[in-house]
Amino acid sequence: MSTQNLTGGLFIAVVLLTVAITFWASRNNKTAADYYAGGRSFSGSQNGLAVSGDYMSAASFLGISGLIALNGYDGFLYSIGFLVAWLVALLLVAELLRNSGRFTMADQLAFRMRQVPVRTAAATSTVVVSIFYLLAQMVGAGALVALLLGVSSDAAKNITIAAVGILMIFYVVVGGMRGTTWVQIVKAVMLMGGTILITVLVLAQFNFNFSDLLGTAAAESGQGQKFLEPGLKYGLNTTSKIDFVSLGLALVLGTAGLPHILIRFYTVPTARQARTSVLWAIGLIGSFYLMTLVLGFGAAALVKGDEKQQIVDSTGNLASPLLAEAVGGGPGSTGGAILLALISAVAFATILAVVAGLTLTSASSVAHDLYANVWKKGKVTEKQEVRVARIAAFAIGAVAIILAIPAQNLNIAFLVALAFAVAASANLPALLYNLFWKRFSTRGAVWSIYGGLITCVTLVIFSPVVSGSETALFTGSDFAWFPLSNPGIISIPAGFFFGWLGTVMTRDRDSEERFVELDVRSMTGAGSEK
Image (tube, rainbow, N blue to C red; front, top):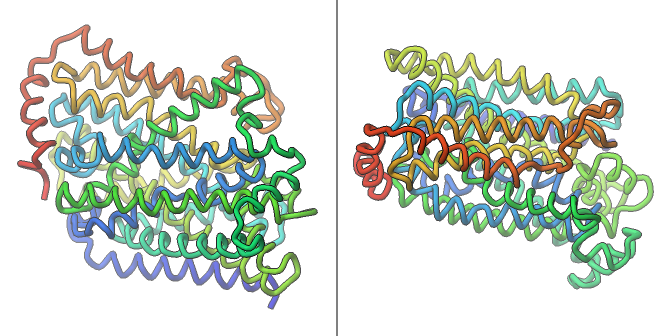
């Protein structure tokens, strides 16, 4: 059997499995709570697996291992940032959000604020963050399928991106949160299993001596000892060092503001289960990111020749699949073909699960926040609201497909870091102020969200990410004036500043009076949605 046939068969098996899960789960979607929050019927351990499945995206499995393979120590800084971020989510957000919200991030803000401006701002931010994140997953899908099917044409990648878009619309329209959660649980188990397998096989090549692995990786990288030391990517000059600090801020603070992670805390019945979810997620995600060290340095050490150049050409996105091929026996071997196909199918499952969660988050926000509470002022049936969510999924999927096609030459972990920067700049300041500052007002919330969002997106547009560099979105243009690739160091403080400024310029008595009720509710769960 050829590699392409084996790969195609495994891909089809993954798709059929996820489609079957979606149909199975959809039988119980009867109310808005079923569609948005899975009927709040998942245990802490189940939700922890699903959160892990949502979080361990193509950026983690493909992007980070590739950055480690290309940049050594500096690439691993992504793993550290993504993991440490969960402590912020656990300590500041998970339990309080579960107690004080209902279906979306905006529910928590709107509890003590004026509905229309706050929900509009929160829904806008949710969609922007989700689109950035979606781009990363779909770019990963295009690169993966092009490698496996042996095609290099842009048309084939574009078709793949469109196919992923259509599948994610199906998961959301048919399965809702219940179907999406079960897809994520299955995907998390597959991803952890596949990662453990490749990690063991890589370490076996070096008699389970991690020092030998690092030494070989350094020698094969062409950088020598510098490959294992800080500074290869972020220590080139003052600008790159500041860029690293900016990236670190975005990664550590961004998770607690990611809408598709936040809404997962609504799928459990109690705040205790929300805490349990995060503890499970930290354990699984921590183990996974430790294994990305082996994947990244393993790719640097074991992938050679044309395959190593493929890693470079893909900005690192193909490091894990090509490493699987190498430890299975190398190009042309049966073992290599089987492992390449297996790991690629796992990566594809990863992409499908994450894009479903992201699309559901955006569609939920459009339907619940904009349609039901802003446009219809709450005078809408659950059936109408869910129907609008399904229509919104089509629109968001189309936008993601259109934007992902020109973004194919960007590293997917880097694209996700931008989503984290937007989340940390626009969402986190408003959430924290709302939970912990009594005087915080509607104007402060709106200014915080829009201020952080506009600052972040503007700086990205005029950064080397979009123009003026070899890996830019528009390689033939140069209108970049902001020197940093990640804007977090400017946009995150800006979000907090605008929230403070908007609040001190006005006085919102109603908001202050409801703060006491929100405080009790967030701490105890009294009156929260069951």
